[in-house]
Length: 498
Image (cartoon, rainbow, N blue to C red; front, side, top):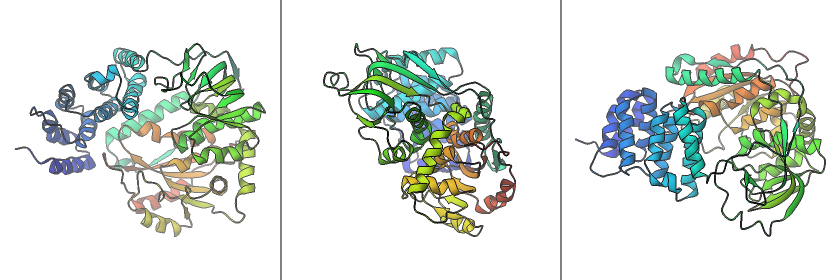
């Protein structure tokens, strides 16, 4: 007899916590595959997708695909399942899910559904192991975005950066024995791919576009309507209509980030600092709905640079688009003068007084991924001489000055670690790292930053239960990690990251 959905969900979550992926598939797949026309419990769909990818469980994949073609999966849930399957290497099954619904080709009904579809297609385009699936996903993305593709050619390119800084030490990994083998394999693949990319010469660059329009999404198009930068989606509604009355700018650098604090601090802000210093008088383009931290960071980094708010359309005579890929930080000499000014201005504006040398960055002010036993962890670290702080309530200058003064940093994975990029010297960083299938590549970003900037970085690996935000750390084991972590070498003299 069929189990009640709530009971089945509790059983599935427990199996996920145990990493019993095959058992989860066998328990949940019949519920998803049933033919009585009822939709499955929505929260079971991503759990089954995760388990099917982890166990390469053919009947579970068939159950998901069958339910999708029968129309029993909500479209956003279907796209989420496709995203999980693609990250887990089950790319043909992910593509089958997307192609099961007319909305994929005709256009999703809401921006949220479009975003979910584009997320799944992005993973398929860049990570599908076979050329046929990649080609199909690429063609599908072109169909979804109206045939508009990013044009890599700009009117001219200003290349910069003559020499690469040597990288810092590779990250230490603590607690490998407690992590399931598939998760370790995924993390090792991410690490190996990054290490293989380190020797490549990828200096930062400024691309120029002349007489173009731009909107708050960062999409760029010519007056004749040809899209130069699509940001992977159709042109924002209302942008073409706004061209006739669009305000104008002369020389301006693109800074229209809407993805969050980490992406702003690591992907967008460095290029804006460089552009403002290299080309005085350049206006900085921000979204008309930009969060406050963006303006606050520019108040420190480029206090005299003019800013323009971008809405549906802005016409720019000379648009500068800076590099956002992380390997460019090997050429830190390009950014160093701007960051020296940035740090000095933050120190000048921050409140005077001593700052902790041993810092724990708390996630008590964050709604995502709460650390269930953080209070006990803070008490244990305070006994070791650490000071716990939540960065969110602090002003931007206070955040930067506080992190810049630290010599040892312990923190759960979170956006506050983005401040590692601009630190004036190497530090030791112990990141409490939640291991969750399909999330390794993005979460590994702070280890990448540390490697590029010379910090001694360690990852304390902890499992995060699939389908749940809450997780916890083994406090006593972490305290035992402190001694070997403190013994890790910092960058040698003369290799200071700033």
